[in-house]
Picture: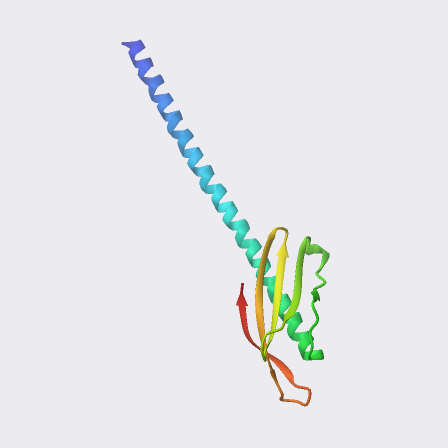
Length: 133
């Protein structure tokens, strides 16, 4: 009777270990997925901030000079391998500006549309639309 009880206990221990292994594997998958989603959210937020910086730079340049040249923003060294480029595009009476932000291999872009108004003698540009590409 005693050996039968030991056999049953051993069998229960093995089943319990198998269940614990499955739970650990499932938990590891969930944790890994959550870590990936968090990393993507952080990267997305940084890209949106870089696009905002590009929009601000384009708007300031247009307010100061009423013209815009293609170029890249100078970013702080702490940002690392990030970049922001601004490129005006021809297209009708409005000025379209493409802003591209890149962090490593991840990138985002938006198209800004400015309307030229003649409130003053030289005129000014007003941002009327911003669309993520």
